[in-house]
Image (cartoon, rainbow, N blue to C red; front, top):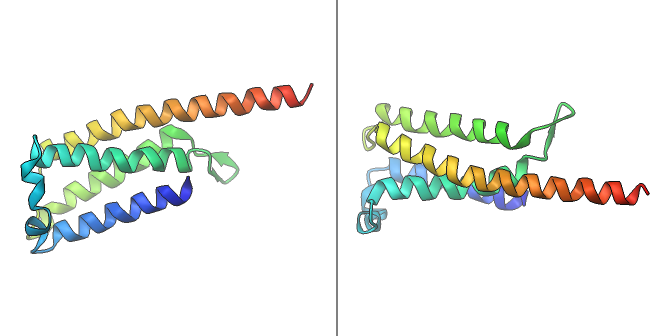
Length: 134
């Protein structure tokens, strides 16, 4: 799952870099054809990054402690916030609190799904460990 998470992060970086370029609007022309346009894009892209990142890295250990879903979500929120605020400095991008809100909504919805899956997965592991110790 970590490979999928790393791929999702790479796709997010590529999308951000292309959107920052002078050709971003011509590459992503189809976004305006989607209901909700850019807002829907923020929701879906951030959501589809959040799901594999939480599932791939929540069980990772840093300094002997499990990262967990909550810390993964917090780190994603920090990156998303930085990315949106950094647009104020870029000539071909436009900062928008509404875009940020839709990104947070995608993070919350897909993050809740990922946290639930992570919880169920950890519960199953715990039950299996309990059974194996009998």
